[in-house]
Length: 412
Image 1 (cartoon, rainbow, N blue to C red):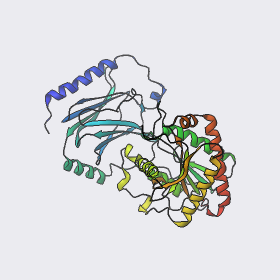
Image 2 (tube, one colour):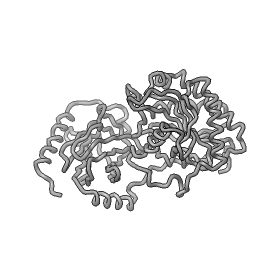
Image 3 (tube, rainbow, N blue to C red):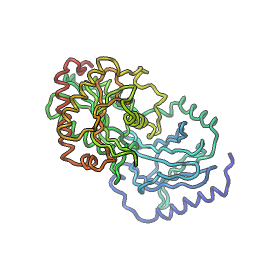
Image 4 (cartoon, helix red, strand yellow):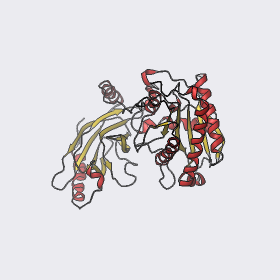
């Protein structure tokens, strides 16, 4: 497609204004010592051609691929520190509806563009820092058509350019025979999860809680603990399941915090979910759909991927595993009700992807609703977190103590 000169004249203006801004002195934080820092991002153009520019403290490498339904362009870059103004990327221009960015795996970051229409990347390059101006990542989007977009996306997939980040297996070292508990703090990296009224992010709340729970489980010395993430890293849902299975987990506990859209009620209290293909109620179905789409946020939609390693047809409904999951859910509810408010129907089931290990008893715990003022106060309270983590640790000890035969630890 021919590029209209007048449009690129306007886009060139973006560089001129950015260069002037870059001349102002700045003191980047210590993160710049180890990682490049992204300092600004801007868009220009129209629905025929759109340019994206992001400034960095030093030059970086990039890898670009596309995904359809919805139309997205994904840019993988080395790990960087994103220090951009609030709400950057929430609104777009031209062919770009919105974009988001963040750490997607240790050592790697990602920028994901939601497109208004199918588009191709005509140019993708990085300009070195010169004469006081920052290094710049530049992407030129040009309007395309669906057939061309799908053909290009398929070719990229065949070439292996859209591979998923790989998680560590977490297999125990040294033949430690103690049962293994896998704690799964939901979301992370690009995927913030639900947000509170003042910007509180689910990914941070549940990571802090999982770390406190790990400390209490390990303190007793009876069990090993593996966390699917220990920092602000995105981990695909299938990889979370894979980690638990590969490590021979005796129990898998996924930790989340829910939120209701504005105007849809003010539910509160903790809930505990086990896997079922038929949700117990409409709220459970809504939540499962929301959580199962977490991988879309990071630019990789797993709907068409196998649910687990080696294409296994996941079926947690195997009688023994499902029974153990439900038994643990009841123990957990019994311990938690003494320290925190539970939802009016605390035990539920739905088709959560992270509960689909066929041989690992698994539950998903919604600690509360960040959309509810009282629940959010609890979720942010050190005292509440400590007491609730202690109650959950006691439930885990009670369950594993009575189901030692079901533990798979030590069989690797």
